[in-house]
Each structure stands twice: as structure tokens, then as C-alpha cells.
Image (cartoon, rainbow over all chains, first blue to last red; front, side):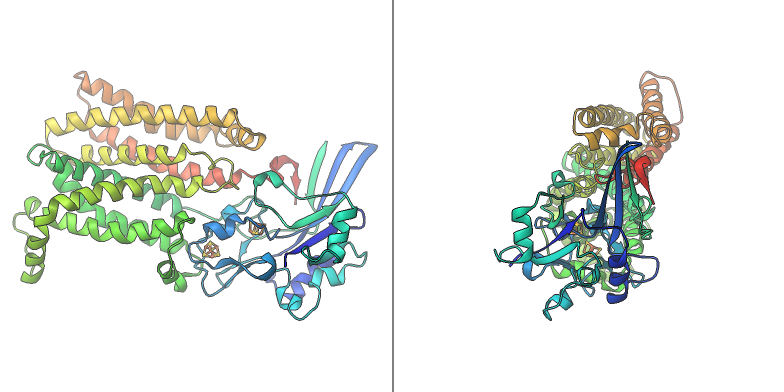
Length: 177
Length: 321
Ligand code: SF4
Ligand code: SF4
């Protein structure tokens, strides 16, 4: 099993529903977010190109945040999901510095927090909150090891990219182009 | 043109707009760690070379300060933790891949070592010192048979401590400015140099001061060489590292780095020490204080600048929140 997410940049309109859904589902404290919307504009007016992405922790397969954690609080769960065990985290913030995507933050309660791929929902057979709520169905979550899953199909048929693969972390959030 | 905007709003405290995971605590701790490594190294080294009667400040007096410096450093490290009550988790596992982890274990060894090493010399420095409890006196006397072994393990652990403070940062590939293998040796040499400067500061003997002036000048020269080398490496590397170097070559860290770290912290004391070695009399306190100040500034600038350098949205001016 290898969980991953594919986000269709052609469908995403940047409404930020995923951001709000995540904040509600995961009780993200006010002023913080585990996912966010990036709009990248390239070109010169009037020849402009716009790419909209919903970004979050990439649940890297070679995650520097797991490697540098002194207490094993940051660890891999089933399907390669990267999680932080709150009761082992000492708040040294090494993992925050180690993440090239700046996906982590210190929760006001002291431990480090970030996207969990809504693993608590996935275990119940549901989709992550952001995926479920997306009005344009721009997000696909699923198992890459299952050749018939929707995400495997999308990655077989569409062009895609990951963000800064050159940082060497083997990210598992894919952007369909 | 390329413009990147985070349109959903993101202002995660400590991460946006620029990463600020570590404030003053970590640089202070890195500085004190390096300083202690330097002092203990010289003390053990010259002890093993039987210089007890010549280099008394280095071998006997300076180590008395090390447990205090380490304790302050550890307190700073502890203050930095945001989930303090769980700090003991550091010691329920060893993770070789995590410099934080083996650094924490190194400290667990070097702290008692520094206390024991200091205890060996207390009576030499303060002849009227009274341990109050004979058991302490006896234990120390018993341990003193193994002084040589303690000295050797100090050399080993001070080396690890000195290197580790640099490796801690250079292990972060996510921060291009830290991601250079030069940082390990640079912090080690800077630690040794601040150690030598501290000995210079407290030494009362002409001969000792002369020797440590020589040592310090050599170390400062090495540091300058490493700094130049580091920037050459960055400029010959990928765009993120070139960008990281540019923060120091015209960017926001230019003035503070070249004035305080290189100018006042390295070049000026080097000049003064060379003058001194040529016979001009300058109070040794001046170059020594400058070197200590430069070492502290180096840690502050490096910790801060590293956090400002990034891979994603690397050109800050592109990023709109
Ligand atoms: S995106 Fe960052 S926090 Fe998420 S797994 Fe990768 S390195 Fe860790
Ligand atoms: S802050 Fe917590 S999760 Fe992150 S590296 Fe430190 S102990 Fe691990």
C-alpha cells in the first residue's frame, strides 16, 4: 500500500474549500493551516499563464523530517503516511527546519503538527476531508500499489509533476498538468 | 515574470513569512558548545603533553568554567523546546540519522566528564577548597588514577561536540545555506578558536599567552580560509545555493556578516594578535573578547540566514502572502 494524492491543476479554481474543510475536520487552531492554495503566474501581460495548486505535506517517501527527528515522534504509518506522535514530540523543531516544503508548524499546545492525509478518516474507509469537499473534484486520494485505483489511472494517463523533486525527498503529492 | 502567491492566506507562526523555528536559544547553545569543546580539547591535549606547570590557565583554570557554560547551553536548549515536559523522550532512543539525537547523547557524556575533569583541578586552583564530604574527596582521588583516560575521552568527545554543532545544521538539506559540509569544520575551528581566546582571557602567564596567541592566529586564519571556501562552493553550486550565498554578497546579511563576524570577529583580532606576536603590547583581553564576540555572532548569523534560505518559492520577492 502506498497512499498518495493527485491534484488536478486544470480543475482547481483556488476556492480554498479544502483549506476550510481541513481546519474544521482537524480542529486546526486559529491562525494556522495544514494546507494552502498557491497561485503561480508566469508570463507577461497579456500572455499570462496561471497554475493553481492546493499544497500540503507531501508525505515524502524519503522524508528528512522523519530522519532528523531525535525521538521517533515523526514516523511513517501504513501506506507511507508521515505522522507526528504528539506524546513523543519534544518540540525541538528540527523537522520544521528540515522540511523543504515548510509544511509543518508548532501547534499552540507545543507539539509539531501538519497534514495527516486525514488518516483517521481513511482508516474508516472515507476520503480525506479536503478531497471530499472539493467542488470541482480536483483532488484524488488513493493507493498507488493498486493498479486500478483512480489515482493510479490518473497518473498513467495524465502528465504530472511533483514540487521540487530535486530536494530529494520523493514527494507523494502529484500535480496533474 | 513569475509570481507566486499564497492566496488562501498562510501565516503559520514561526514559518511565515520566513522560517523562524529557532531564535536566540540555539545559536547561544551552539556557541557555548563550541567554546566548551575548545577549552576541554586544549586542557586535555596539553595535559597529555605534560604542560601542567606551563599552561596552568588552559589545563586547570579554564575547565572549571566548562560545567557552567554547558549548563547554560543546556538550559537554552531546553528553553527552545516547545513541548518541554516530554524532553526525556530524547533519552528513550538513539537515532543515528538524527544529529539532534546523538548530540543529546554526546551531551549526556560530556557534561559529567566536564564536571569530573574540573573537579580534578579545583584544589590546584583554590588550595583552600573543601569538598565538605570526604566521600567526594575520596571518589575524586580514586578517579584521578585514570586521569589519562579521562583526558583521552575528552579529546574524543570534545571533537564530537565541536563537529556536531556544525553538522547539526549542515544535515538540513532543506536549507541551502546550511547544506554545506564546510559548516562542520568551520564550527569546530571556530569553537577551538573561542576556546583559545577564553584561555587567553584568563591566563596570567606570559609564556602561555604567547602560545595561545599563536594558536588563535592560526585558527582564525583557518576560519577565514574555510569561509572563503564555503562561498566559493555555494557560488559554484545550484541556483538555490547561489541564491543563499547572495544573501551575503549584497543581500540582507551582507553588512552584519562582513562587519561583525569577519571584520570585528576575525580580521581585527588577527591583526592585533600578529602585532602582539611582533612585540607591540596590546592588552590580551581585547583580541580575546573580539574573538568570543565574533564566534557568537557567527552562530547567530548562520542560524538566522539558514532559515531564510529555501527551495520552494526561493526568490522571496516572488512570494506574496
Ligand atoms: S513534505 Fe515536509 S513534513 Fe511532509 S513528509 Fe515531506 S519533509 Fe516531511
Ligand atoms: S519537533 Fe517533534 S516531531 Fe519534530 S523533530 Fe523534534 S521531536 Fe521530532
